[in-house]
Image (cartoon, rainbow, N blue to C red; front, top):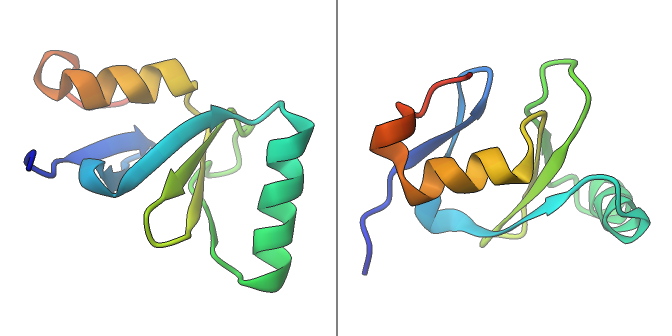
Length: 90
C-alpha cells in the first residue's frame, strides 16, 4: 500500500493522494451534469477554486467531488512526483 501524501490542489487546499479515484477536465458536459446532480442530491461537492475558473474535477473514494482551478495535468504531476514540484502553487 502506498503512502498517503497531501497534494496541493491550488490555493493551499490539499487532498490526500490515497483518496483520489480520478481527475477529469471540467469542460466535459457529462462531468458538469454529474457535479450538478451530486451537488443537488447529496451536497458532496467541495469548491476549492477560491473564485477562480474551474479547470478540473477530482473524484474521491468517499463519493465527494472536489473542484480545482488547476489543470488535471498539474495535479497529476504533483501526485506522481510531489517532492520535485514542491507541491506548491506555481
